[in-house]
Amino acid sequence: MSEIDFSKLAADIKDWARDLGFQETAITDIDLEEYQSLLKSWIENDYHGAMDYMARNQDKRCNPGQLVPGTIRVVCVRMDYSLEKENSFSPLSKRNTAYISRYARGRDYHKLIRKRLQQLAHKIQITVGEFGYRAFVDSAPVLERALAEKAGLGWIGKNTMLLNKEAGSWFFLGELFTDLPLPVDNAVTHHCGSCRACLDICPTKAFVGPNILDAKRCISYLTIELRDAIPEEFRKAMGNRVFGCDDCQLVCPWNKFTNETAEDDFKPRHDFDDVALTILFMWSEEEFLTNTSGSAIRRIGYECWQRNLAIGLGNAESSDEVMNALQSGINNSSEMVREHVRWALDQHQKAQ
Image 1 (tube, rainbow, N blue to C red):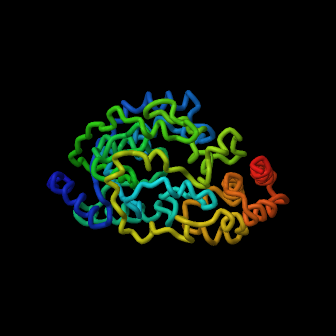
Image 2: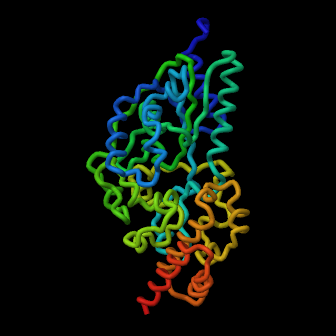
Image 3: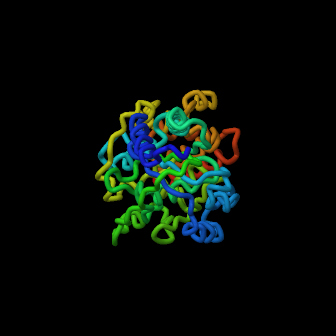
């Protein structure tokens, strides 16, 4: 190890990562002390809701060396995933069409990025021999945005997303924890200024303040993380958003620099970028499992999928197709789905 030129190795790692499809790579140390109090306060205020895993292992989240002993550096990567440069709200006005967050329309990114990180580690291993490492992609107790911010991949904006001056925020993050003493990169300055577009656009007013999100009010949390009934106070505001919400990214000025991805795996499957709510609601559980195989959508399960779609149908324009779909759900085997169907039918009744 003493004979290795770590500055050259760091440069090579960035070149190899680019060849593997990552748009940018940066390296940081593991000192996350400045983020520890922010995480602690967020948990103490119960802004994490039912995401109990966020309250666990706080020490490991803020001390990567505890999560993977021997770690002294983190190689942070980002990969663009958007297939469109335009950041239009028009799909949200198509009330009978399902809105699925851009990141979830194609194949699940976890496996793709983890595989590429493993390939990156293999290239490093060929050069330096055996070394300690572990790859993470939105998994385990890792503060990935904090690490990416420290590494200089961007800054954490007021909407809690990582923002990049050349790419906006439509990208995935991944990390390679390592015991190699690589030179670290510098963090960048923040560039949100006085802009509060993301805070003001949120349909459910989930932002307590700049960079503070009450997840319990966030549509992404409600449609993906929550396993119980969605509180009625948020249902109208959800509109046709049935899996995730992109509003705070769509409105962000930095996303005028959105880059289109070249990854085929991120292309929409089953018309997830433009498909009728009724079609999705009428899927059987078997069809749901088949059509969401290899998709991030599958993790919410069939019951929550139908729950979300019932709300979308309740906010849709009335039509025989919509009403027939909802009527088919009156005797659903799930009481939670039935309750959301009754709510949806009631919305149409009130609109008459």
